[in-house]
Image (cartoon, rainbow, N blue to C red; front, side):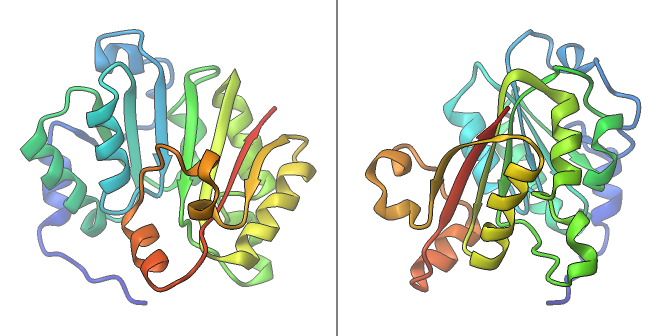
Length: 212
């Protein structure tokens, strides 16, 4: 599906106080950005921001950073934040491949991946956010007890991700192929825009949690 361009979105990103458009070199600076030592949770590929904005509002003692590479999509999250003014929420416009230039060793406590681009062609497998190549990136920035949480309705991508967790040398802590029917794992679940859309269509939602 072609992404609709929103005129002026890029300019809004550059000027907005909550958005970093040139974040390279910010490793080790996030405590200064937020002005505290609270845990840092990030969402990579955050879309319009419903998930991370909801979490930030629910958990004022956790700092959240949402990452999105498309200005036209990120704009919707920025509009929410301009209205809410949550002090524990920031955004980055960037490609996730460069994430180790932005977060330093042991700087992140949790990574959320929600309904990520499946990159269906085999030759693009390393671009998937749950590939072993990306788990190697996460390994550098996550604290020892940190974890990755992934949700999708794409069964092919999910099966790939389960295998990549193992190939990357990580532990599969939790795994469900029908999150909304799993009373324990679904407790406290915050739905994304895509999660609600696909769930309403009858698609089961898969979720895994991985750590080292």
